[in-house]
Length: 178
Image (cartoon, rainbow, N blue to C red; front, side, top):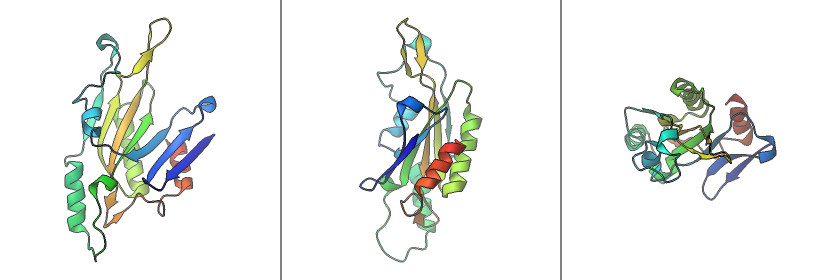
């Protein structure tokens, strides 16, 4: 059973799966944090990674422009007629998608392209993490394969990641497509 929450105070869409009925895949969205880039591209190494000998190689892709450059370009293109100027912090979002060992960067690029078309947003970066997880009772590494996909949601003169535009059915459909 999937539940979709929309927290209006932070415009944070999330998909939450009940632990009893875990799906094969899940995707969650939240505003990207200030440290997202450093975390996703391992510029600062978190202390919860697996031991170095158990880590598998991560994969990365980046748009040729930074998220801030994409945002500023979109602001320049917009034919604004007043009102509040959108903020970068409200327009930079991140999706986290759980994976299995066989998923690769091409799979995530296809998913990102699908999300871009479906919601009219721009993918800025993809990071596949294969270095996180935990150790079971026998001391064997249990991997938490997942990817972070970052998006710029301000495009074509408007904020495209808003409650009025993205309905729970859209997210349910995306969950099924993922």
